[in-house]
Length: 243
Image 1 (cartoon, one colour):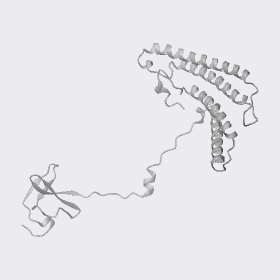
Image 2 (cartoon, rainbow, N blue to C red; image 1 turned 90 degrees about the vertical axis):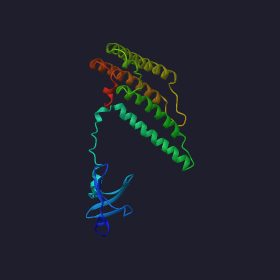
Image 3 (cartoon, rainbow, N blue to C red; image 1 turned 45 degrees about the horizontal axis):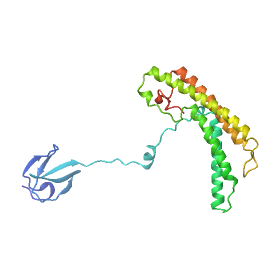
C-alpha cells in the first residue's frame, strides 16, 4: 500500500453502493471529503462499513440579469374594445366620478377638516347609476347570478324548454320593472336633491333607462339563444371566454 493522503491512502477492496456507484473502501476515520482532479471524494458510512464514492462536480452556467428579466417577458394580450357597448362606457364614467367624489370627501374631511356635504350625495347617486347600468352589461353578457343544478341532470330537450321559459320570464320581469319605474317617476316628479340644486329626476331617468336597456338586451339574448340552440344555463363553459 502507498502512503499519503486522499487517493494515496491504503486501499483494501472495492464495493458497489446501493445507487450503483463503485467506490474504494479506505480505512474508517479518514478525511470525510476531499477533491482531486475535478472530483468530489466522499466517505459514506453504512451499516456494513464505509466506502468512497466519487461524483462529477456540477457545472453552472452564469446567467446575466438581462437574460433573467427576458424570461418574464410575455406578449401583451390583444385588447378588443368591440365587446363593450355604449352603456359600459357610461358606467365607467359614473364609476370614476363616484371615485373622485369619495376621494374629495375624504380629503376635505380628514385633511382640511371641512367636509363638503354634497360629495356624499353625488357619490350615492353615482353608485345607483353604476349598479343599474352595470346590470345592463351583465344581462348582455349573461353574467347575472344563476342556478343551473338541474341542467346537469335532466335531458337536453327538457333543459332547452326550461332555458326558454327562463328567458321569457326575464323579458317579462324587465318589462314590468320598466313600467313600475315609469309610474314611480310620476309620483316623485319635481323633487330636488338635498345638498345640490339639481332635480332628482336625473337619477330616476337613469334607472328607467337602465331597465329599458336590460329589457332590450334580454330580448337580444333570447334571440341569440334560440339561434345557437342553447343558453348559458345549458352550456356555461361556452360563455367563459366571452367578454
